[in-house]
Amino acid sequence: MNRTRSRGWLGALPLLAFFALVFGVPAVVLVAGAFTAQGRPSLANLSQSLQGGYLNAMIGSVRLSAVVALLGAVLGTFLAYAIVTSRRTLLREAVLTASGVLANFGGVPLAFFWIATLGNSGVVSGLVGLPSGSLYTFWGLALVYLYFSIPLMVLAMAPALDGLRPQWREAAANSGATTWHYWRFVALPVLAPAMLGGVVLLFGGAFSAYATANAMVGTVVPLVTLKIASALTGDVLVGYENIALALSLDMVVVAGLVMAIYLPLQRRTSRWLH
Image 1 (spheres, helix red, strand yellow):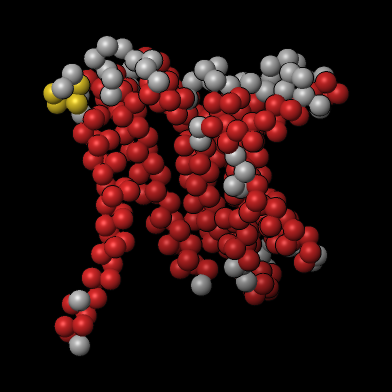
Image 2 (tube, one colour; image 1 turned 30 degrees about the horizontal axis):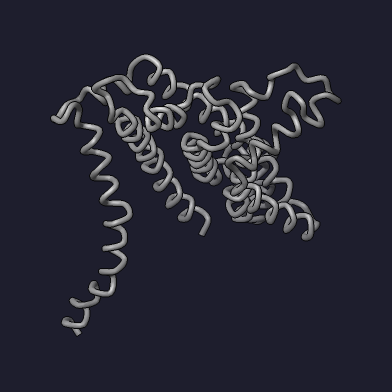
């Protein structure tokens, strides 16, 4: 029995080898390149990635991601609550199905959809009298990102809202608690981990998005993903050829912080709701 158990890990070797090849090798190349300048170990790339236009791009990405995360979390939570409390099963299933589709709808097709609708020559922009170029701004890009962020928040919050027990509200009412007291002291503490986890999830999604922003705003809105693409095509200073790797490492650090917050919150939510 012990010998069988000791050999059990051998079955995971193909998965470990695949993981090392697909994730490990690129990670090593990324880190090594970020700390290499002019053929020798150096912090020049990392230092440059946190200055000037690169720093503005990082701040722009964080700012855009924070706005999208907060607005998407609020709107998505209200929409999720509306469908969870709805008595119409068909409506609930339709909204959840649509959310699953829209949460994965992005890239160039999403940009084309919005440009054709609210762009300078869009179908709707002329009818409502939108100013020319209003879509190709920070807030226009945030609006487009909300298109897939709100459905993603609905998918994240619907199971948590389903986990609220009707007995909790009844017990609170029998104890003389008002609706505000119930939400303040019972429901919100239970939902808080899921809500915060959703905020972090939306932040990470908006922070890493590239194709939609590239097709819509180009260099109008400074974003770190666009800076990386520009650096990869040769728009770099002499001696900083690996600046794209340094910017990518900065993003990996931010993504690591995002996941370090999200995973504990997800585990805590599971303990509360089961």
